[in-house]
Image (cartoon, rainbow, N blue to C red; front, side, top):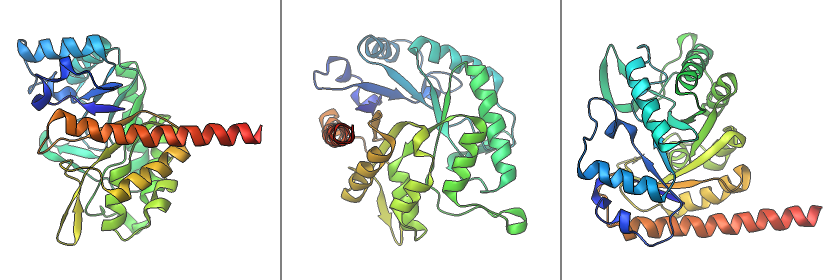
Length: 283
């Protein structure tokens, strides 16, 4: 089980003695205009690299956007991924910027065939430039983008079409599935099964908050019971793959985040044992 590399924990994390399998960082904090410089931040990263595998999860690639991919940023990103020896790179299946202006948010793409081809082409190009596989995350969204001509797809159908055409991986965000299901009056289990879970390389879990009639994916609370239940379903479908606890706002003490990771690990081990027992029984 993994957690995010967050500033709140920079002093504690290098000395952490609790069970932890990997870390995940936001690469925009280490390359590009907003990059952290040397000194303490660099020493913390170096200390963590010595102890754990580290994955990179981006927020600004805008794979569904109209602007050309930033080759300079991608070169710098590749340098970071090479340093981390990251087996793959993950980002969101969304758009972030238009005309060089960033929305500072992850915005949904129209679920249509033209968008499938556009996103798949950009994902393949990114994977070629990074020289490693790319995984895209299913996002939470609060409005559905209009589709020209009205010939749209469901989210699961759209995500499947993109990852199959791009021949890429899926970062399966279970909390996003639940948030979308509640907000759009859908069944969360059916939404999970509509996604290409067989291509999943990693799972994300996070907390959300209710604001009026909607759930908001704010990554600032413990994982709720309904999302834990959906996580168990996801593991049963995808197999025992690496899982990350995302806690990005109102970040609590390190032990609180690690407690969430421990709960995920317990469920992960239960599902793995059940799958092994079922396989032995059918052999």
